[in-house]
Length: 221
Image 1 (tube, rainbow, N blue to C red):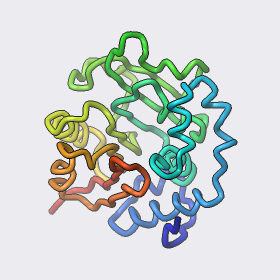
Image 2 (spheres, rainbow, N blue to C red):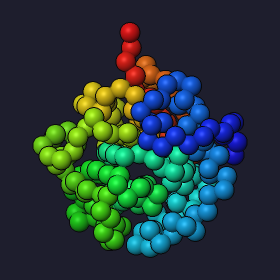
Image 3 (spheres, helix red, strand yellow):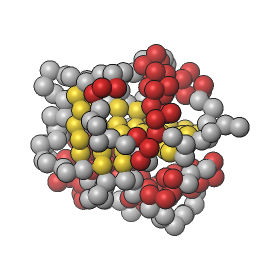
Image 4 (cartoon, rainbow, N blue to C red):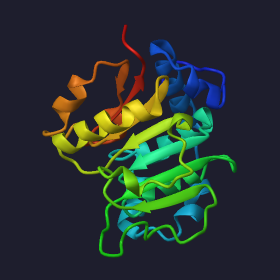
């Protein structure tokens, strides 16, 4: 899978200085990393993942985005990630497997009858688990400094109203020059939301059969 180019790895500064061109360069760099990525290296982190979910991680035809997330962590080296819709924790584990020790991942998910974060049995000091509705800002811990967020990952309730609300609530909090990922955006109800976004953006649906997109939040004159 050809990312189309290489770029030197600039650590978390890449996330802070993203522009329209650098968004593509960062994307290409993660694809370049993917060419030599071995999933065997993250299997210890996935030891408690259910077989069906593990198969999704291994499926490079329909859900390659899990492995690509690992590669994105390597090239972006984010200091702080906020994930909306952590569910059982598969995506979080993929990111945690590559996160620097001093990074932070705040992952929120709705209560799911005891299934929330059920795949994460190892203690990761970088991870803060939040169980609650992300429409309620009181669920977030007091130590979360939104301005330090390098990456916002939106994969929660899959309705147009919910995603629009999350964009309206969270984009102003993280500030300009930050990376936003959106999963399953090619679902019929969600695709119009993606089309409404007036930001530098890239369609990465090659990574996931139901859509996987990213955009860069910048101010408009």
